[in-house]
Length: 475
Image 1 (spheres, rainbow, N blue to C red):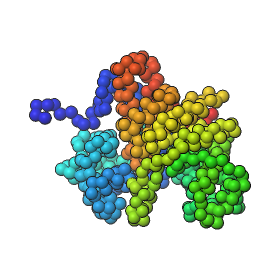
Image 2 (cartoon, one colour):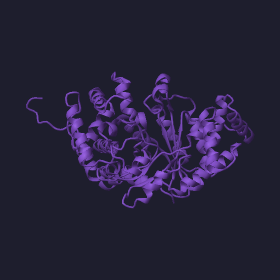
Image 3 (cartoon, rainbow, N blue to C red):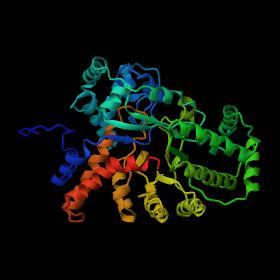
Image 4 (cartoon, rainbow, N blue to C red):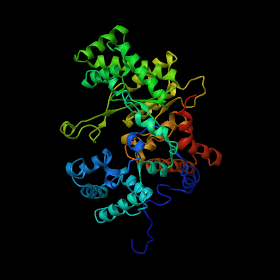
């Protein structure tokens, strides 16, 4: 407006609405390192210290969040995942950004531009070429390789997501480099073992048998093979597992029933919903027992229905922006019974539960609070995980934190995860920290939290960093 002093959009006090919030962020949250306990970064790129060709490769390759927005803005697939030039794709993204106001992508985009390129302008159709050229110049002149970006982001720990069949050779290469101080460890993600009724399950069993040199013709033999791979991951520094489920289920079964279901799967026979439920229930409980004895953490992400656009799935494959949120019944029953089954056998590992459907926030938060008992003195042994995927928005994060505070102990929350394939997605931690500090600041201003410096310092520092460091380690 005429006569007004222009303040940059991403300024020092971005999203910080009062003096207390500003004090908490700038004094305690801002400078803390990032403990990235769940992401999907490419370990080969870290091992080889990949140098990006341009801002388009760095920013748009593999980023289904941006792809999804571009499709919504009428951009052709040629300029998203197709063979259009880097300039054409970047221009299409810049034009899309203008329509992203109200979406966290608008905030993330400008946080990233400022953090890595020092660019404080709003990206739009009128200046895309200038920003494209300036960003590319910085990539080349400053040598913004993968490792430099990680160091610049103040990251000290990265936990990637890895298939049990993976050789982890790139983790080995990273670990051998004493000049790279960031610890990078694998996460055990056995999706293939849960795919009964699908060709991927047969493929997983075949590869597991070949890799472990173990015959796998029964459910128990599969478990032996999986445990062998857990041992392998453990020796490579792994301490976390992850499980991506469409729905949470709990159906009890006998050993004979599980073996019959396994044989049906091997024979490529049709599976019923009951078969699936019994198998998934038993497998999660059996894996939980192994994790408990390994002193690993078990993550459960549930609630995504994937690859919904079959035409586009055939054209561009999975993880390309065609997933959405699942609804289901009996979430409370399934989660409580599942945790109870492991607890009853004294083999409930430290567990983080993430729900994609925010309608289940109170269900999940109240359920995990039932299973905090332990003799090891673990604070928040079973965690209500951070706002994930469609919930890593301002409102999604606030819903998750306020629900956690309603039912549990916010002080013990392990905080934000990146859950990204992008090496410049780390400003999402800044985003989270600003939202957290503002949430606390507003609560203090309204007289709902005490204005106690020592208490607030511990709350902010714990959630932003120290809780994760303490939780995601072995005893």
